[in-house]
Image (cartoon, rainbow, N blue to C red; front, side, top):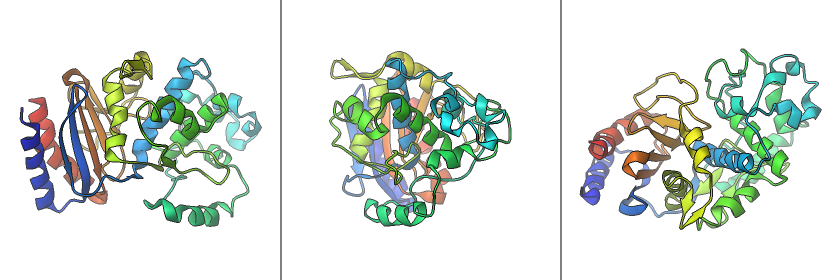
Length: 319
């Protein structure tokens, strides 16, 4: 297959549609086969693609024997056990529930960053968080529970923030610092900018700034079952479990077909994708050895962007 010609055809469709895309890269068997850039490859907020790095951090802590998916959140944070919401449902909330977006809170609040430019973050966060006297986790856990944890999927950014705080509590490091030694440095990713709240807790839901060529490395690591240049960085068992379908999801478009641990399933080749709101994706088709890294800012045109990608890349690659 001529990957460069395939990607060039995709780029032409993107340009004709006027979609704002930063770059796309196609890898086969760990090797770069094609790349197209519309802008210089500089670090940008990868938004909810960040959640997949949080998921990897949980996997590392589980492998280290420091966390279990059956751990109750209130056992890690007993100081919040007296919250009104702790009576009943919060007391039964586990790490597994927040990883599968089935906490039962169904909160639509975005506790993380709201801008793409890291230079403007500090003043905005200070203005917002300076009005708060509560810990961010307390604000999340006091949100009402509308159903029993584990009942159904409901996408909530705050679930990923809970998972990140559990990692931090278990390992004694922020998620950013924990992953720097365990993943970023071995993957040859320079220490990234990753937003945190004013108390220094790394956001688990968004705020990680990466180049497209670095963002896609997590997908490459997963496709290689945790192996990177002969070193095992992440257990293959965690990769299989976290990318497997753990819960059903509402179907909004053909790409929606279930959820793992902060990772979306993908309807081709038992695939999965690490996804951000603006069109940031690392799509992994493991049985074909394919990884597609996509960085975009398409906003509300995301459904249209998915259609273009399906027609020009996914269908030809999966034929």
